[in-house]
Length: 231
Image 1 (spheres, rainbow, N blue to C red):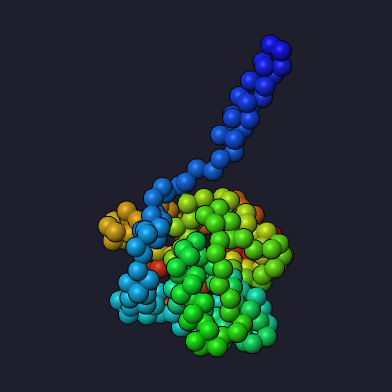
Image 2 (cartoon, rainbow, N blue to C red; image 1 turned 60 degrees about the vertical axis):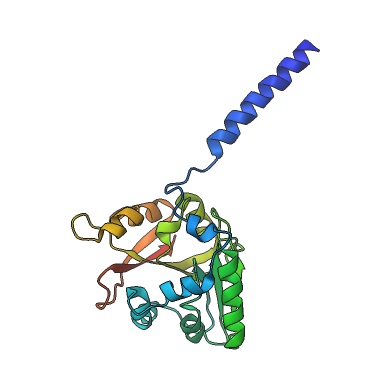
């Protein structure tokens, strides 16, 4: 009996250590807390995300024009928010393609579903993902677009692994995010965004992607757009 008890105790210790060792650690704890609020008001976020004062909104057409997206392709918009880019992405893939809007916020996903239904964008669907995975089948998409969301990835290693798995070989990953430059970027950006462009590139390359270059439209001053290919 004592031997059995000791064995069980040892197993519990080993399992405990194993679970602790494999549990992912957030690289920016709390960054997504505002979206987890019980009283989250989607309309307020629409007003914030879709305002002319926001560079990504004002230059949305130039941003989408820079993407190498074609009719018939399947594109995932990871961190879609209120669905700013869905109509334009839908136009690019046409009715023969598919756009999958993905977010961790249930209220955003519900809002996007209502908006695409109103616009009869039948090639667009919206779905929830987790904080560590985009929750897409393997080899299911041709391109992944991440707009002003990479800095919200609390678990970038795990999330990038799921993106790589979802992309078909040769598929493209586009990252649109804030320039973070000490002495140049706004104080808000320096405090909110954890990594600059060089660090973002290094993280993504380590995850099994090839850097293809920068596509930043000339009109963008606060943001950059870079492309990677799944190896």
